[in-house]
Image 1 (tube, rainbow, N blue to C red):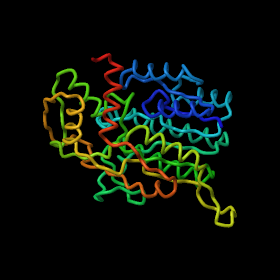
Image 2 (tube, one colour):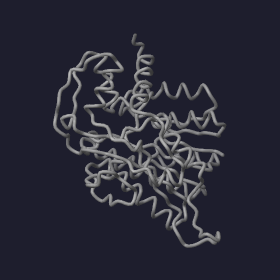
Image 3 (tube, rainbow, N blue to C red):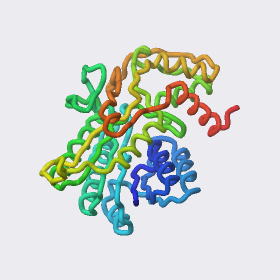
Length: 331
């Protein structure tokens, strides 16, 4: 099976590619290597991947001509689409980047998928699409019409556009709503990365929502396991119990989270214990576009995929901190 991973130099893309390559899949990765965060970290991920069997193209998903050229040279079975402009605050300051990459770029991937008979398009959505939903636990059937920021709106748009392509062209699509992914090789713009960095640098950390924000932190290995389970489960199929093809839509959506919500206050306390350092804390109100709480209901993924995250927040943060010290040569 030949798999294309977009955003392969990113946090999730890197871990997924490494796992698939080690499992003897034929993996091709693309990434535009933009400067949204530390390029040295992205390059280090690619160097690690290139030490094993791996093909890479530096290309932007918004460049349809270059994408077509890659597809003409390869016969892909599955696309795992992870490339996107991330970040809530950045979406407020640079909204055009989200329309360009997350909407126009995703359209290019959909068009190439339907025109090249891709058997399964798996794409990254986000817990942020739940927005102002008042339910304490988010499940896939809930209304997601009130995103609190443009990043969330772009991800909601991806789900809607993918559904229309599935309905019109019978393109099998599965969307994955990731919940606050963390771990080694993570993104420097994420709160946990900033907390650890500032604690080691002896700088104050900013805790928004007065420490009363709650997040369903999900360790990277559990996310990769969830993606693999979707891959191995196969594409959504338009059929009834008698295997007769019906005029239905081969489309599915899953929450992939840890099913546990942790306050930022407790999160920082765990980091303090693991680093054996006391943080200087600055408590601030919620920022524009922030959600107060996220919690994944993963009963659907548990039932259909046998998805069961295994990593506690204490173990996950320990692994991240050990990686951080090693990567940045800290004693």
